[in-house]
Length: 311
Image 1: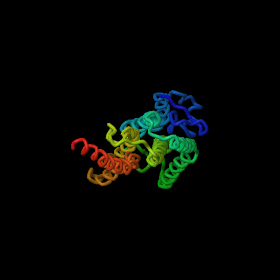
Image 2 (image 1 turned 90 degrees about the vertical axis):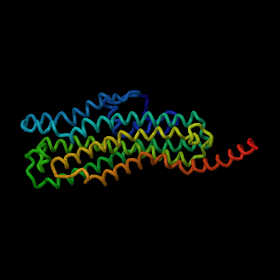
Image 3 (image 1 turned 180 degrees about the horizontal axis):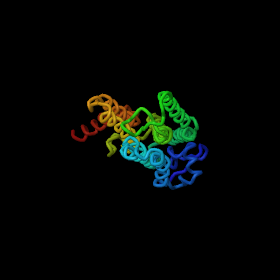
Image 4 (image 1 turned 135 degrees about the horizontal axis):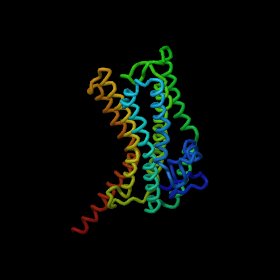
């Protein structure tokens, strides 16, 4: 998978990354985890699992050997570190591939006039600057820190040496604190950054829908020539899967140990599905008015043509 961290000065609409950028990506490049042309997905997954899960096992084995069985059954932890984190990292590769393919296709298909092409280049340059901005990742870290503060206030009056991996007890061990402060933060940061990169694409899709595009009512994709945009929705699937896996693990915990019933989560599940559909398909909705007008135009123009030929 090819990519580079483009600067706004040398950005090209046919070779731009909306994913690999920002301080976290540069930090990984400095460590050799990400190299030009290589995501090193397996190595990055291994490093984060070593950081987020292995210390939990060692801390529990040393300080609370009796808790190892409970730790091995802690599916909420596995949902975060062994399912969601690898999927989110793999999702970056998928998102990068789909975004690059779509942007390159716009250029190759000749959908843009020369003036519109210059405008789109400016939009991409703005997105690259936003991608490299420190503010989005700082906002994600700040939200994680705020969540930790609320959690610490909740447990500040309790003894923190009791078990955390036995039936979701209120008290936390050292392994429990590590799980909250380190393991959960890794998942939350990757999820937040993934959503931010999707918002960048959403902005691009909005700007593209406002461009003067060369669309054809009779295009074989049945979407005027914009059918290729549907390829991008799959790029949100890893984010949706990771978030729902963690949420489902929490719901399962409530059902098994807190007396909750599956139907208690009916409406939250419906809202969750609706929200995922809205976010995933939202960028495509920007082009609906244009395509609706194009369809009406095609019905009228080719209706006349058909009438003339059949007369």
